[in-house]
Image 1 (cartoon, each protein chain N blue to C red):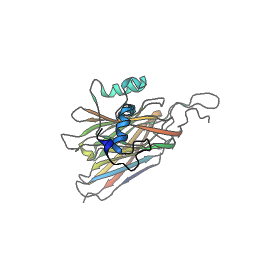
Image 2 (image 1 turned 30 degrees about the horizontal axis):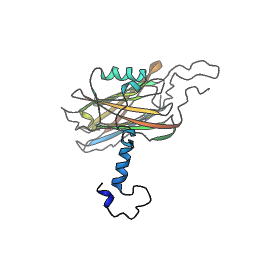
Image 3 (image 1 turned 90 degrees about the vertical axis):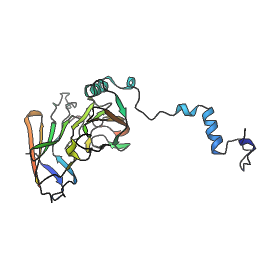
Image 4 (image 1 turned 45 degrees about the vertical axis):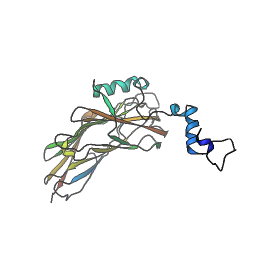
Length: 106
Length: 169
């Protein structure tokens, strides 16, 4: 299981715009590199990242090889109600990872 | 020549010494036309791959300049990890929000960097990530608004050491 880090304020006020920082460990092999013998290294990247807030999609990103290793994505959302933020990463070779964070809106 | 009658401390050196004179001679030399306009370069200067990738997103719509802020350090040592932030001017209400943000590059093997879907629930149309750049080049951010209009900004980045494409393992 890939290591992921999520940083989000756990107790935002209702209606507050909160910042969500996400990081996941992944090599993000571009598919444009070669070994010393000249063999092409196949592409192995995360292609999609989706964030949901109590089941509703709030953010989606399509990633390309030009995203640096260990994809780091920061975005914002409005803290509407208490609940669960879920993050899902999917990619080449059947890669799938997910992480959940609970927030309590005051 | 109203200015020539003005008392000038540094007169006699043969150089224009007031701001007005300097500006005038700069105009006469055509320096104004040498300064590049602050806009995106003509489409003809874009590589075909980038043009195709942008056309796939924008279609036939007009690409406006502005409303998008793209923050990348102008001089980067290592192209393998370049911090990159995009912020779009938008009220982010239910009726007027940013629908999508795309980042494109000019010289990497593939023109796309990231494509993001947003909605009014974001509250603020701003994102940040870390990207790879193979060479010194222009990075472009394009935002699609809920009314269907497209806005963009380009930034030139100087890379000392590019993201290694042919790095033998």
